[in-house]
Amino acid sequence: MEPINLGNALASFDALWSPRIVTTVNDYDIRVAKVRGEHLWHAHDHTDEFFLVLEGELEIALEERTVRLGQGDVFVVPRGARHKPSSRGGARIMVVEPSGTSSVGDRHEEVPEHVDATTGHALGEDV
Image 1 (cartoon, rainbow, N blue to C red):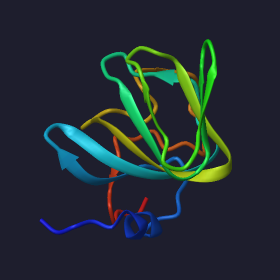
Image 2 (cartoon, helix red, strand yellow):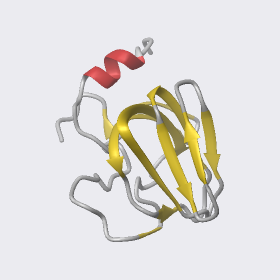
Image 3 (cartoon, rainbow, N blue to C red):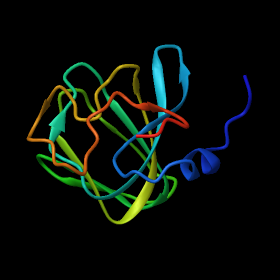
């Protein structure tokens, strides 16, 4: 049990849309990711998804609107809501969701090659 510096955690990998698990709280993963470009339309049927922008800007398209988040902003996508995260200039984000939750949700469009369909990678794991 040692403190984890999020800057160091993010510096430990380069892959985009490939979250790393920095720690676990009860049954929830605290994940960090580097993002740029578009993710994919998807939905998590059984859980909300918490986003915190650590650096840069993130847009989350929902069926009825688009939410724009800047550094320090948080947003929760409600369970079952179709959404598509994207970042034109790139961002570093934190995501909180139950351990084992897929980064592409339960329902999704075809997964593009640049998106890692994962339940999260351990810090230091070479992917």
